[in-house]
Length: 177
Image (cartoon, rainbow, N blue to C red):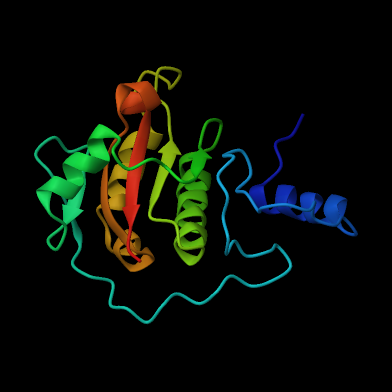
């Protein structure tokens, strides 16, 4: 069976959901169980990002798997890494190509920041099912998180998730207000 593009999947989903009405009750991000008060509807455009400067770029730490902007304290990075900040939303990249995953992460970060979320998790796996060249998604995600696009999207810091939440197979991301 031929694999459909993310755009085809999104279009098919919108068509299937046309005419559907939301259930009563608090709004939640799909698959997280976390209420989101200001999540944009699929029929509305997401709110424009606040007019705050993006801040300094996120610099990778010595371990290469974490990073923080110059205006983020080492204590905030430790809190993120230890799980003191719980992820308010999750994105699972399993089964995506590198290009699909990076596009999905950028959309996810922008949507979460637009909805007022501060800490999110991206599940990329450890690369155990990758071909012989090693992991693909984790290094690509970390490279994106340390780049200018992530800074412009509002990324302040990132770190591997604690072992109880996936360890090196997931990355926690701290977003600007």
